[in-house]
Image (cartoon, rainbow, N blue to C red; front, side, top):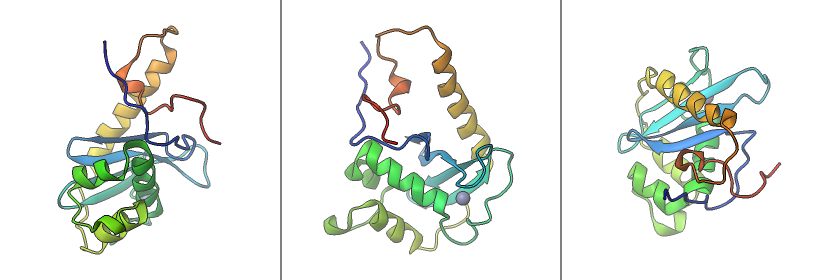
Length: 159
Ligand SMILES: [Zn+2]
């Protein structure tokens, strides 16, 4: 039987509906604060911290020029809730003192290295993974665990 890892803490799915540590990146989908139709696909690469952010229509995020935008910060925040701070630090290979290990600390440490602009082409791949996850919502209800559904909290979502 597949093992489903519960999130370290419940997440706010409305703001960041999809977050994962995969393909050597922290990547996910972040809702636009102003436009309900729009989402941002954001990512930060492990090691280099190369970052990218663009809309689902492939327009570059205006906030992600030269430094992390709010979507990337939200993504880091949600990753810490989902995976726990230690796992995020390990995966992204962030060199950071124990007492500074928090979402804000990780973001500050990574952006402090002046990371390069990442490859925006990854966004299409991340977004298609997100849509694939959404497709599970249309499956017949079952009590068998689906490992890819682990980004849903085990209990009700926090509003
Ligand atoms: Zn952005």
